Length: 188
Length: 329
Image 1 (cartoon, rainbow over the protein chains, first blue to last red):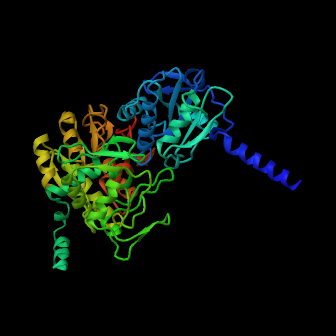
Image 2: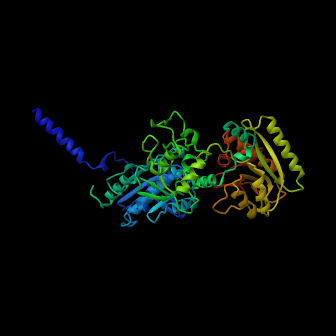
Image 3: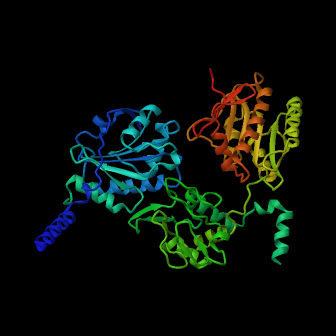
């Protein structure tokens, strides 16, 4: 009797260890279809234009006058995009939303993106503050003070798998692996 | 010998602002990530897997122009002034890491290989830099000055402000002199008084030469009409913050010239005299907002933080994208 209990515990442990990392801490997030403004000045619907149909979606927050962590987040997203060279922007979507939309005009976002070497598939977003704030609330990325915005990337896809969070400042490998898993390039 | 040297520096404050050639080169590396040897400096992140030009992540963008660190998003860059790094009894960080005092060679090892003098790994956010021996030596030379350098025109007792006016602007000259007289009598700003240096408005080349000599912290002027595209770049290159009462066609092309502010888009003489006083009020309010550890950078940021501030009936707003204080109707 006692032995069988041990065996059950062992089986449970084994199952926990087998469980893929993506399932840990999956967030209950629905990407809202609010209209924001892209770095080229065009309006986009966040869900239908940038998330719908994508197998991998990465969302994080930046602002262009941020000097300490945002360039670091930016170079890591750029590295991620390089690692995704074999995929088309129809498969994945990298989204950086400004937490300082009043200052971050599309021109500022464009200049920042150029500095980081962003290519199609990486969209930077600003817009009227009300709309941006509403999006950030829905995505749990809202911050009362731009200097304390959380260095977190949401990684997910358009589907039932949901989003997980990933430290946007940690080494780029876990982020790249998460995204490649979503794209089916590596086993989950 | 050391005491003699320190006393000498106190007597001649302008010497402090002067850097040797290698220190200047080190400052370029620290602030912009640009080396003097012509070889690109590379920043390595994620254990070397991400290679980016150091211009994207230069030292100063996290550690600040004063070396004391600009915390953001939970990342707290440590104080890297030479005094802090070389405390003889060792250094205790708030994150629990402690290490022996740095020396020149362990300091070089820190920013190239990412370990402190006691062999602890530095934070992953801290890039490891690849640079030439010459550039590394320049950076070390500059580090020893970092945090000891006041911007031009600042002493313990005073802040020197240039005033650029035309030769016939005697009324506004008197008004400004009276305004700052009262400002100083009322206590000045954080123990410092404002010292005015009046200078005739002149062409861009001569202005550049004067700025080199005059050692002023910032400028105010009454009207820049006709010289916007000549003078604004000179002021911007000299990194001298300036507040102009008016200009008919201010140079607001992107990228903005961050050091040049205007009260209003107008040409003389509509508001210029009244707005010159507004420019002076904006200047003193900016100095108050910037606080005691005043730098040109903190002063510009203080001006940018002004949102609908009332200066005697004139409502002024500046921001990172906005250099004209009074909105046009």
